[in-house]
Picture 1 (spheres, rainbow, N blue to C red):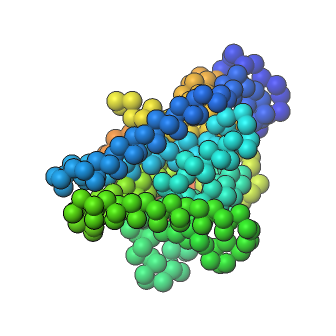
Picture 2: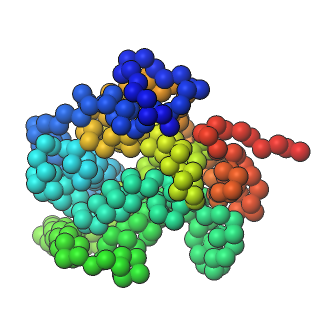
Picture 3: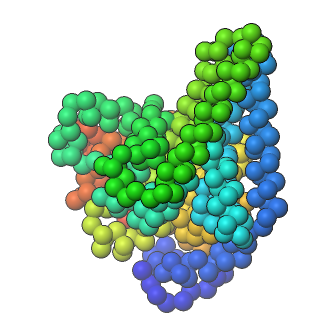
Length: 371
């Protein structure tokens, strides 16, 4: 990594040393401006959409219409969460206290305790992205670690890495184990704010379910059906959405994981450990541009409403350095097939038997020999 100042207009040659992060971030300074009106407009819009879709699960009679509304509400929970995620990074508005308030408000439908997310995401994940033993988000096991697991844990890991259950991974490993009233094993530090934030989201969840029960009684409808369509479906859809998003951000045959801190630091992990997934039909914009993820990891102060510009700037300035992937289900399940475990000594993805499926070192895909 080079400490030599670089131009903010001339792209860096692919074979040149990677500029220091402080110089790369200077390219994005004009895009880090935050406004209050953007934040309030997005929050009001998404909460209005959420309310309308939940109302749809209540007033509509056809099960398929209720299901579609429930799934739509789950997608909007994801949008609200992304707003809260920005607030947690202090990139939503220029006001720190306001960000804390808006972040907690945006996190309510996802039942996410703000302070616990802040510790796990801002401090651990962003501070040590793809460093095994510290960053726990979709961290791949080695074959030795996998074989040492009890049979039940190995089965669960196979399910997580199948491509069919990203939501189950997030629900259990991220939300239940590490955020929602975590035990002392998962969260040894006990802070009063952790309790308060868990109490806050728990109260919201109880009120949400109670409102659905009340509506079912008032309208002479099935309580079980309304709670399922109006709470369970949105919550499970949201978990599947965030599990998929986070998996796509940091799992790719070109993405390298490290178990040595010195090597990890030398690899410029803020660029080499993230994926820019692109989608047709403005789907990326519908997810508040969270898939422009390289820019977010380079500079967390860039607000979501400027991430597309920031990502374009980075891709122009750092040609061939950033992993850019056009999404397709074929690519997704091929990635899930290849990226089961990780060989940290050879920087290679393997299957569950330890057979190398792709080398990821230096961000360059090299298919292993067939011999």
